[in-house]
Amino acid sequence: MMIKVPKKPLPSLLTVIGYPFAIALTIFSFFQVGFNIEDFKRNWGNRKLVTDTLFNPKWEWAIENASQALLETIQIAILASILGCFIALPLSFYASRATNQTTVTYLIYKSFLNFIRTIPDLFWAMLFTVAVGLGPFAGVLALVMFSMAIMGKLLSETIDSIDLG
Image (cartoon, rainbow, N blue to C red; front, side, top):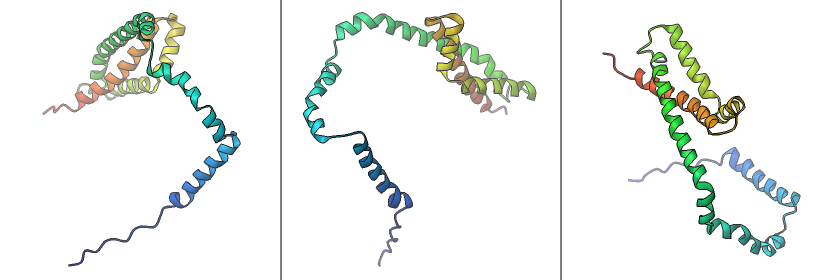
């Protein structure tokens, strides 16, 4: 019995036009920026200026100068996550259809969490830096808003998935 193999499809428009265009644009860009393979080969030895310190860092200096900042960063993350979860817990009950039967308040709380979630955490950091000054407190407040929005959404959806039966 002979197995019928399907015919190979024709190349797509991306293959026929896109790939040659990308190759031509790359070659054109090499000429535009003045890329020269001889200069590249001649300066290849200079890479050690970067790679030596990259692959053999000075750990003593890093530990001495960055350990306090690293510890502070971890403390900010833990504190902000815990506070954000505590704030998100009651909000998530209001943003859930299973526990909030009033359509108006449900939509208000759900929209609030959605709105807060759309704002990037770097924007919150800038806003709180201006409001309370530079320092870890502004970072905690920014990450509280981020954690509150994410956890509020996740908790409200988890509450919605509960079988009320």
